[in-house]
Length: 353
Image (cartoon, rainbow, N blue to C red):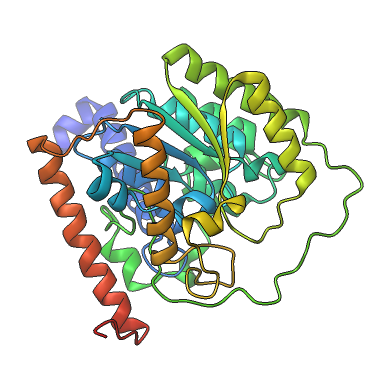
């Protein structure tokens, strides 16, 4: 072996380089956040790629107002609509656009549903939110473009390519979960839906402070245009929605701009804030954080209402009876029911009455 190394010094160099690369890879796997406890929102985007069948009828894109407010299980159980939520915390509209672009590399849905709250942002506000939306994406041109569109002035593209550059000081934050999930993770959503069963009534919700300018930024409009054009090109129905979250405050002046845009572009816009009585939303029982997001009961009510709209007004077919999809959803629903029971126990909720 020594003689061979002397004759071929490049062998020693290659072996040494491989050891260094492997060591750095293992360190990176250890140090990057796992998002399986505490702040789990960073795990949502990556879960999509593990789906066995990505032939979804409906894709939701947007921020917490989609992933906490609509239950895909109800859409399937009540209407046979196969759906997935590609949501992430404070997902900016350019990130939504590139996630849609990325999703279309796998399949083409009949309907894309976009929550319009992110129109309020013309530029990224936080690296932490950027990473929760971007790091879970698989590498593609869409991910590259999304990173470049999202980075704050303090961020570096190389930190996304080599996350160890960003997380090399994270030693003091490591937990047993960082070791357990070095090479794999566990699901924390149900087709992108993040469940909470507890309730906290919406009381003393602050009203919006007057703004100097209610106009959405040109950058936000640019990406909404791109989203509408991409959907039209692919034959996809784009539906704009505003979830019934009471806060952050949704101004009438903002709503008027979305209504006008939808009319000009022949799009459907549903403002669920105006439909809460019809849907049966009760802000005393259907929110877990005083009106910011729906809990399980609220998310199931919203999904049931939306499912009826999608079936009756947009003609989405009932796909129950498809053996492959039935088998997949049987597993999702079983896990969903187990999580409900686990959360009832966690929060001390008695649902036997």
